[in-house]
Image (cartoon, rainbow, N blue to C red; front, side, top):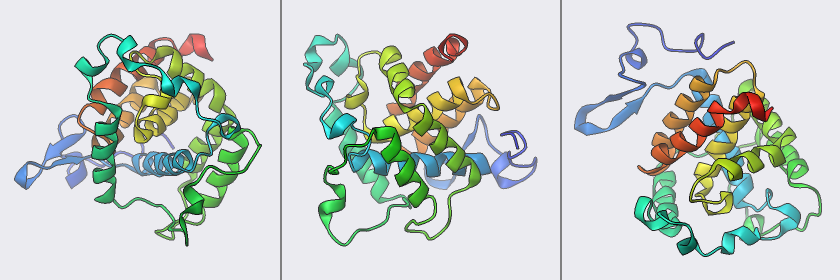
Length: 235
């Protein structure tokens, strides 16, 4: 089923929007949420949790690029706030959202795993488990599982693509939510022939507005737009 088929029907509350969002009483922005949007969000949530648990690090080692001197990248602080400021804002927003994280009995689950497997293999196993067992006790939609399988199958290529076309930020310096959104959208744009690039980009912007900071949509739009322009050469 395509994204168009999952869209809200004319006349429904979700359809009465302007460019995918409307402003409710009090000025709060409401976004059109289709079945595919919900599936993408669930995939983002699972990727975010896997990232926070250290499952996506190569050989469990910190990416050496994370220690780069950000002042060496012109415009970093001029165009965007510090990573720490953005992470704090995202954490505050996540605390107000219904995220599908499973609460563990202790804090050891968030420590770096003692696992020598490749990140893609760890992600594949974790995603399969979280697709069934989550805090809200509902199984992940079929399309969320397809996304997670696709990202795992192409994880190294997805991350390399993001690194190549990110300007001013390395993958490791992006807030974790932005990383997850970028991974989902990059897989859809480059490797999922059933989704048009503009649809994937628009959905990524919706998720960024829902889950990340006010600056994230602008940055992700530029990054994913560059990837979309070159998608045919990246496959």
